Length: 313
Image (cartoon, rainbow, N blue to C red; front, side, top):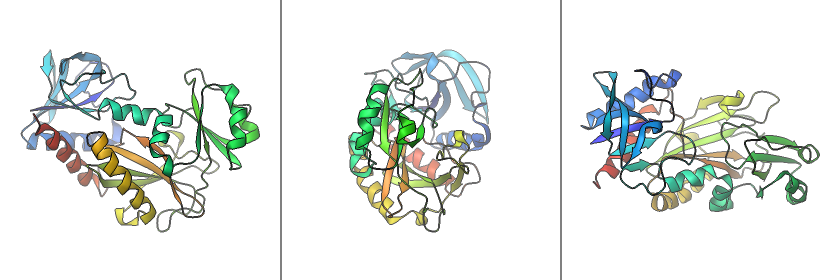
């Protein structure tokens, strides 16, 4: 069996994981675990994909190093780490995709994601143009409002502020559609985890929680994204609030059946009254750093996920 991790970068050089940074040892560990299963392991780029499971150029991982192979290579299972919904191609069932296209679309389209899990989400409205902001704001019951690109990443283009300021918000050129959400005040924190504003990320593989971390924004900011300077701390799984566990159990069962056992995370906030709310679904899980406690739990769960899907071939 041939298993590959796929990214978006160009097919150049002999260092396909050069962009990974401090998490490189964790990625190499995953490739090694694949080899222990008897699989050939590769790093791929969607730029060389020709369809039918064939990549016209790959990097094979062997003997602790990468070898660039120029010839076409048929891959059996692709763990897709590319962002967006242009890949994998629609209707391409010639290879096992993780995650499948339907789930990527669910996570990418925040409006669709909200409709799937609205029971556990802040009240949300679709904004198809800036002109709709004024009409939606009276329906927002919180003093502050959150405006997000309906398909954004890393907190780019996100507005958090007063309704009066929101009236003057302009959609960035690359984001023609937005969602408006009620603001969840997480300033009371999570018992035994953090004392203030937060974003609790729960990583789920095979329907189970495999690792978790909390992100805390810099002082004076509401954005907890790492790209916005948020501070990330791994938390012990036993510290996850029971209210979050109950929601995860319900949603994970549904996604397991409906989306072919996807690999994903859910971002939670705990409101001032202790209610857990989901901010969004993520189809791309940031890998743990090497020193993190649940690193191997996460990686071994990935291997079990791959194995269960390869068994169908």
